[in-house]
Image: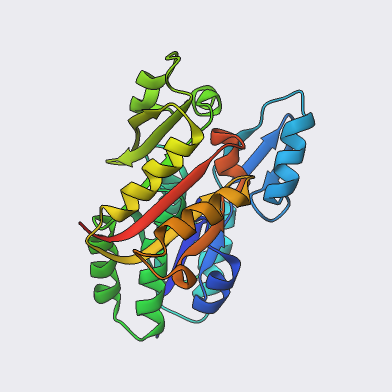
Length: 279
């Protein structure tokens, strides 16, 4: 039986990739006051930013319910006896713990393994993609697990912000706290290290921030996967893709939209580059 792959909505996987590889997505939640929406299902990214613009209440994110994972596990257990779940970093969300605890609530018998990716957005997404491709090609459970653990060490990401206000208010700022309050941090650059948000640079302009993201991608000697993500400004994505075309074929660069849950903690100014490869 084919190994099946499950992940959460923070992986920001393009819908066509999800469909092609048969990946199951469990959505996190976005809460505006008493209204709760399933990430990317009840609330699209465009709808989220429209609500953010007019809402008097700042949104918050919430982990998936155990039932959401249980229903996914039980559905897949009808066609496989092995499921691998790849979640966003446990240092930024309780999703990993919920996914793990939900195994005990299953009605069907199936081996379920939950992996903390230690990443988010398309850095997490690339780990999921490579696992799902291997599974689709007939790789064994152990082979897929080895691919996951190997690629956790081979992905990286950088993100440019126009403000860290949302990250700070949401309590996800981690070591990037050092960028708060500096007049120079107009366009702070953050990344993830050991599952935690970390600061990398303060850029004086948006153009410099975009240049930083491009140089980050160009620092890899070998690139297997490259993704550019945005919240609102698609034009910036095109600028980055054009600058990276000499390093990696632009027709193979993923252009992904950040999910409402990510937007809750980043705001509309996010631009991110994720890479799977070697330095």
